Length: 454
Image 1: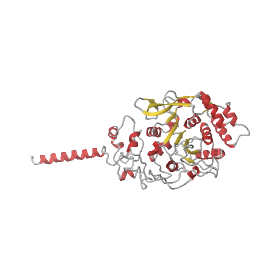
Image 2 (image 1 turned 90 degrees about the vertical axis):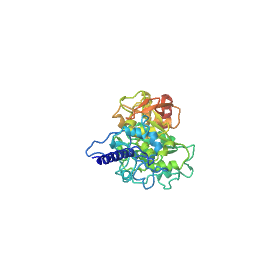
Image 3 (image 1 turned 90 degrees about the horizontal axis):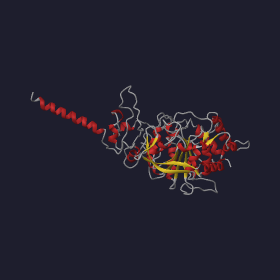
Image 4 (image 1 turned 120 degrees about the vertical axis):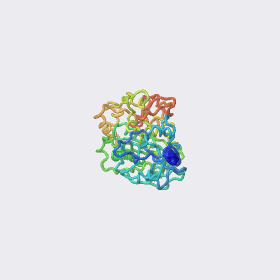
């Protein structure tokens, strides 16, 4: 009997050490990064966990976010960027793990887990939204590497540098900054008006479509730009969120699909310039969040002006504004990763002074019988929208004017807590955002009419 006691004690000690080792596997950071398991530990038939935390694939290389071999099968975020993306109340992985079940806890990366995504293809794209779908025009392409060496491959982004013989533009020309316009054109008419403004006022313009609907938004953007004689502007089809809100199918017949390699193109353009890079967000933040997750160092290069968010007034006080509500995970991630992004709040864009109906000057000037083809596209969008709503608010043209530095919108720095559903509230301990505070509506309207319908 006395001989069995040491054996029993030894077994108890071994079991305790084994349990401790299993616990340490979930809290120790051995690999410069962490990967959340994609369900392989979940019991059969168990419901999926509904978590705010985005699905980040984090490579464990200490120097570069990801390598050539890994680029097709995981998204990379550096530990510093991951830490910045955390909500204020959970600033450590250990604290985060204490709020998670074993099935959703962050664990060190292993080869088995890192192969949960086998390649980037038309049918399998790692993204942030709840129900994200690749567009039909997605083409398989190499993901960019995060290195100091510019990517040598050349595609249609060369339009930005190869102009006519009497106009040689350079990407690093400080007088003409690169401007990325991320727009969900094709539904509310303010997007198409904003594209016209950008095409007429931005020298180096790149258009990416948000909340894509089977490439239709990209085709419409291409049609409008060609009608404005801006065939030098590249258009990229962005990420599809599963929606089908589009009003101008009759106007894109025969337009070829546009490239969807916006991450590669954006990285190539940014690597070729030392000048300012502006990002104007007019739709959901899905494209921006995806771009920052793949190339996190862009967070320090992009000067972002985004339409959306509200602090005091909104038509639906129980939810975030439309652009944030459409993909709240991407909105929350992007706002946390960026360095003081500027928000043109819905408090100021959903104002009666920006409301356009068929009786307003903007519409009547564009609807003349001898209007150019681009103006007919704009009025067609207005007409289709007016049959569904009483009028259109010019949210997006105001945002473009703010991004271009025009003096119609005032901003100040605000500390804001970003809720799980992407609603915003003032909080002294929150993230620093630059938000709109007032608008000179009369001055803005005079400028808009001069640009769009002189």
